[in-house]
Length: 211
Length: 211
DNA sequence: CTACATTTGTGAAGCTTTTCACAAGCTTTC
DNA sequence: GAAAGCTTGTGAAAAGCTTCACAAATGTAG
Ligand SMILES: NC(=O)c1ccc[n+]([C@@H]2O[C@H](COP(=O)([O-])OP(=O)(O)OC[C@H]3O[C@@H](n4cnc5c(N)ncnc54)[C@H](O)[C@@H]3O)[C@@H](O)[C@H]2O)c1
Ligand SMILES: NC(=O)c1ccc[n+]([C@@H]2O[C@H](COP(=O)([O-])OP(=O)(O)OC[C@H]3O[C@@H](n4cnc5c(N)ncnc54)[C@H](O)[C@@H]3O)[C@@H](O)[C@H]2O)c1
Image 1 (cartoon, rainbow over the protein chains, first blue to last red):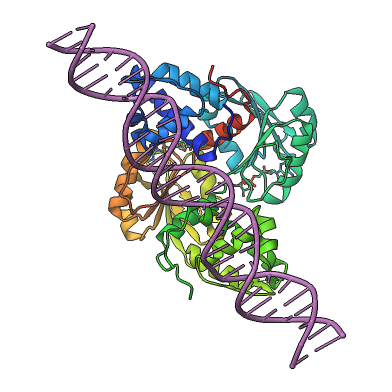
Image 2: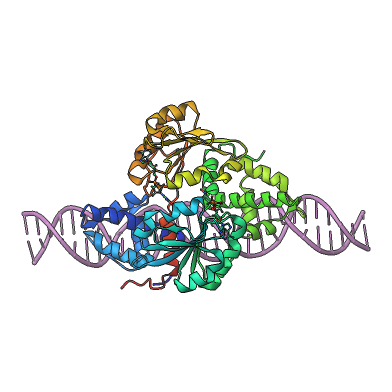
């Protein structure tokens, strides 16, 4: 166990888990690497190689038990538990994220929202009341926050990231178009939609010549 | 020219362009691969290798002209023009995206919004009036849509993607947690936030052993 | 004009990831 | 209980990506 697992492998594991949950919904009991590959947009060999990093979960001649493999993947991905998540920035993207039901469905619980706008602080969003950003350290400590979602303007993101980590947050999902610098043991995932659009633009741009 | 460019290279080019625009703002005139690397979180050799796929833009001993390299990168990424974008799904995430100013700043113009909810169709969002989804083909054709953003529920995404492509959309940005199947020459970028959270969860999960 | 300090552009080396191919293992059938 | 039919798990090969290291080019100082 424990050779470093690549990012692409982790993404594929997420895909497999999603596919397995769909199969569970249809009461399928077993699935082959071939079938999983088709749903995940990869190859059967890749599926088997990915899984083989963590053990051997299949039965030769038969395939994988849908329920068992789903359980293993939940455990591997760490989604066999609840994660406490705080959202900073109750703006346009923040409010969309707050109401996104798929987070809760995977155990990511949004238990705190922070903002600096006095007009927003104190507002009640379902079970949560928006706290002032000055309360960040207290909120992270008291509510035992694991993960923090940053949905604030780019120029505020670095400072908030530092405070969050110092206060005990263990991982960050960053929507600001800023390269965050934090300790190496704090995983950061960046979501940059402009970059995603540029990837499309690039793919559609034929003229990639020098001059 | 024209060897296949990897995804990671394209993402880094976006990073470099963002860094260069910041430097332009500060009236810097030249920049070295070393400095660009520091901002993009990569290495100087990687910067030079990335750029070398498209030509040679630097001056030995001096570095790169900020303005010239930014121009070249805009051209390479295809953001030296305007792209006409339609948004399908005027819900939580759709409305956040519609108001996101960074898209327009890079030339991605949201010129149409579609939804199927009669309560939303006909509403006016700034310069755009929400159209009924039945108008998709007409809207894509008449407004000459290049790219389509899918912000609809997962079970609607595939059908809309097919219609969009048939009507002339050339690339898709998909927010639904669905693996879209479209023709190979239509680039699709998927944004799956649950997957991003799972990547954090995985990174923080020590117990990755088999049993 | 020459020596020196930089910094690019790029083959080659090193490393990682993906694909291949097949022995081994499980189930079913006769 | 042996044979046939699948499908896994995995070394080895292939492909792809990143890092290294240095010649070549440019500017600067004396
Ligand atoms: N709108 C989108 O669709 C979208 C998409 C992707 C990324 N983003 C990024 O997400 C971030 C937020 O975007 P938005 O469109 O939601 O902006 P917004 O202005 O609607 O919301 C930002 C919120 O952050 C709060 N805020 C500002 N500074 C703060 C601070 N120091 N501490 C705490 N709260 C603070 C503001 O009060 C506001 O409520 C930006 O970095 C943006 O680039 C937005
Ligand atoms: N809310 C989030 O933060 C978030 C984040 C990431 C991804 N997503 C994904 O984005 C999609 C939309 O999420 P949301 O939270 O905005 O949902 P939502 O319910 O708020 O909005 C969906 C919109 O799509 C419209 N719609 C439904 N079926 C349609 C159809 N066939 N044609 C045209 N329009 C149709 C609805 O009328 C609604 O306006 C979902 O796939 C979701 O998984 C949401």
